[in-house]
Amino acid sequence: MPSDTLLITGGAGYIGSHTVRHLLEQHERVVVLDNLVFGHRDALPADRVTLVEGDMADAALVERVFAEHAPEAVLHFAAFAYVGESVTDPLKYYRNNLAAPLTLLEAMQRHGCRRFIFSSTCATYGDPVRVPIDESHPQSPVNPYGASKWMLERVLRDCDTAWGLKSVFLRYFNASGCHPSGEIGEDHDPETHLIPLVLQAAAGKREHITIFGTDYPTPDGTCIRDYIHVCDLASAHALALDYLRGGGETIAVNLGTGRGFSVREIIATAEAVTGKTIPVRHGARRAGDPAELVADPALALKVLGWKAARLDPREHIESAWKWMSRPHGGRYRK
Ligand code: UDP
Image (cartoon, rainbow, N blue to C red; front, side, top):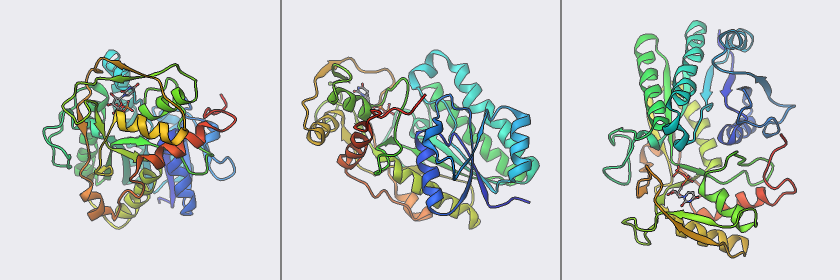
């Protein structure tokens, strides 16, 4: 029989670790399965979380985890998430983001675990044909990263039909910010995301930030994104769990604020937060970057009772700056 333990794959990563922290505050019992390729041991409170170090594609290990902990639900964060790399090495992405979770799903089926919360992405929509993007927007991913997530959504729907697996696909927009305590944060290697790169430039850790494209059809010519605070993402996972516990059907839900900010606006806000002048260069567009990605988050409010609480990217940047300003400079121990 499933217990009330939650199995969290990728729980030592950026969004996973913030969600673990939130779930612990909600008095949930948590087991993390993470191979620590991108995750960080120090992102988890060792005294309050069982960390199983290993891979979700390791069938024997996954079987042991299910036999020992009998999780009632799986929150699945573990994935590769470098869009550019997914274009040059698609099989790596299909192997890790699509094939590996099948092992996990087989164990769930065997053990009668029928609740799944999936870290999906707005990249499953591809180039938007309308903005804001609601969940009925056509899904036409333009890179293997987005395609791998979209395909797993399809797999999960088929598992619902076949054996009653109920899933919530949480389609994240641009995750940003860090826990306000400064105790956990964002530490990617390599780092490709705008806000941490801008803050590294502010801290003098890189010479400049390059704006990828200044000729987009937007008011200031730079791309517009919907930046969603990682703590708001975390709270959405807890509500998605409540939804499934309440008998909710499989559903896809956007997680965004519904507001867009340009690259230039983010840089200006980072200058205001840090009090530093950030050297900027203008570069070419990055392949596959749509001009504007903004969520219509209405469904999340309707079905999960969730809406983003941190709407101003200033708050995101302040929390990220706090994390980066710690003695470790925003880097976990290796
Ligand atoms: N961006 C940029 N320079 C950088 C990194 C990102 O101009 O060094 C832009 C990028 O083109 C996009 C926005 O910042 O419009 C957010 O990019 P990020 O990689 O953070 O997230 P994505 O939108 O790709 O998920």
